[in-house]
Image (cartoon, rainbow over all chains, first blue to last red; front, side, top):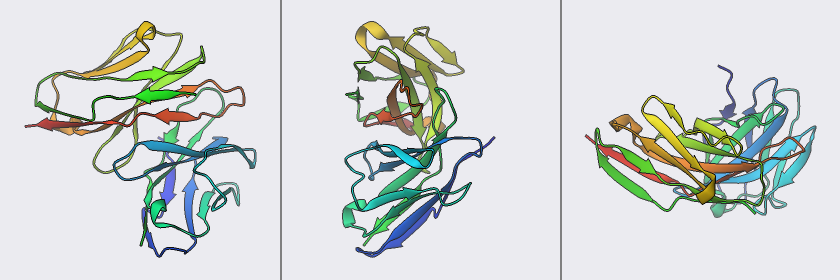
Length: 113
Length: 117
């Protein structure tokens, strides 16, 4: 079964450092997403991306965050200058056309020290 | 604005008991989708079910069943004869229909289910 893959599975970084989380969505999917889950809390929408531009972003997705699809397969989330409160699990997801179910990756756990 | 409420934070049951996880939602749309996801201790999100707002038929899949009631804006999930492997956090979620094609899913706060052997 096709799956969404995310790397790294866990990253530890110092506050103020830049972090890039990588995702390979399902190959024929067109819509890409990032969600965040702070430990023990609910999963929150960050951003959706289609046709090389952001479709919608949440209040969480401030100027420190950016997304990019640098080639035909990868979808990245960059946090420019990490803060302690960015520590969370970040989930990438993708969907095809129509009302499809989001397929989530296994997540990238980010720990900011 | 859409909202999903899972009032049960944690539930403990003894193996083989039945358990129902409650979910109440709010939306202004007439077309929307409801989901349940399972998050085991390993952390990934496992899709369980999707219902659209026009289909109020209850669904059964093995030991899992779902009761969708539009009149009360609820989408409850029952596990029959629970097993230790059912121990996880379960999230109810809602997505409104979007003409631009993307899915913005709003999750509830989750219910942590512990099944005791």
